[in-house]
Amino acid sequence: MLKAIFFDMDGVIYDSMGHHSIAWNKAFAALGHDFPLEQVYMNEGRTGSSTVQMFYKEKVGRLATEEEIANIYTQKSEFFESMPIPVPFDEIKALMERLKNAQIAIWVVTGSAQEQLLDGLCSDFPGLVEKEKIVSAKDVKHGKPHPEPYLMALRKSGFGAHEVVVLENAPLGVESAKAAGIYTIAINTGILADEILWRAGADVVVRKVSEVEDMIFQLK
Ligand code: MG
Image 1 (cartoon, rainbow, N blue to C red):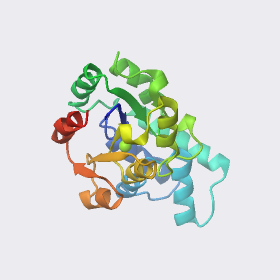
Image 2 (image 1 turned 60 degrees about the horizontal axis):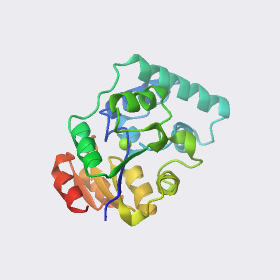
Image 3 (image 1 turned 30 degrees about the vertical axis):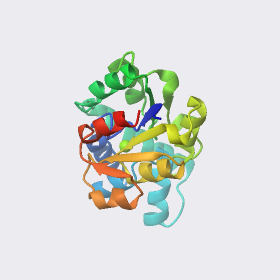
Image 4 (image 1 turned 90 degrees about the vertical axis):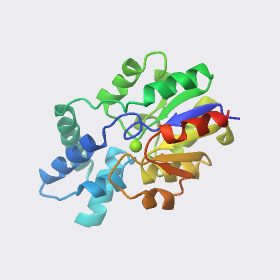
């Protein structure tokens, strides 16, 4: 019995991954490092500090200092906010309205701490997304691929894992949701091969949410 959909935000609700990948790429380039776009997509879902640490461990051979993390993340956020505001994918609002009518709860579970997008959620989806039904980077210690974000959403919402379906676009997001024991639909809106999402453990991989919409309502 389906009680709730847990939406990832970037790349599922908002067509924002292009912006994020360019912003990360520029922030690292400003320090003389190359962080290719594909790597950004592979690491999507990590918190900002985890993304920086992953890069430093792999490419610099040591951990980044708190100052370095803050510096890169600030730059990344500034680049991000200098770009046009990302817009929601076309089909998402209609899906949310249909969920609301069917009394299926709408939660957002994101690794982002990007104020601009978090503030935008409630105003872009009035009556559909509520602030208290958002789990963001600020609510967890461990970002995706750790299961904590999705476990936190289960705990806050009071739903069992079997009563929820996750919509994710990123391999680490799929890993996080599956580790929390939740049925996970991957919507591949980015540049990675579908195979990567299957390997991350997705139960289904599609390109558009409309391909699975009827299936979602059959679960009700
Ligand atoms: Mg995403």
